[in-house]
Length: 110
Image 1 (tube, rainbow, N blue to C red):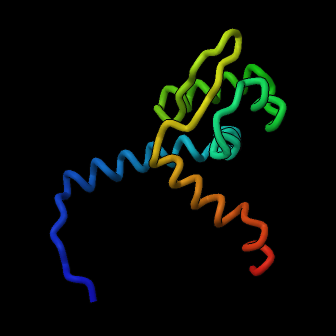
Image 2: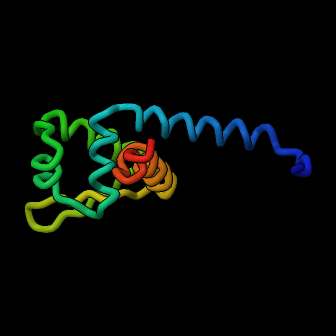
């Protein structure tokens, strides 16, 4: 049995709010799909558009949300904008989601 530890309720509340905000951002299928691609590494906007099949206006909007929430960062090289995951928490959640929902060897067992 684990020893009971007293946790600071204000810290828990703050952490719960932060986690809830992350989960709200991840609850959009387009943003989730974009992050799935970015788990594999940095990608150009054009690569993301071609890979996930999200048209430019929607792609820009969803990437903007991810950027505004601090989940991704960008860098510009000439005319290209590259995106990468910038949040260790988002990356950790994406890894768990991948293992639970995308790992084909695991899905065959279930």
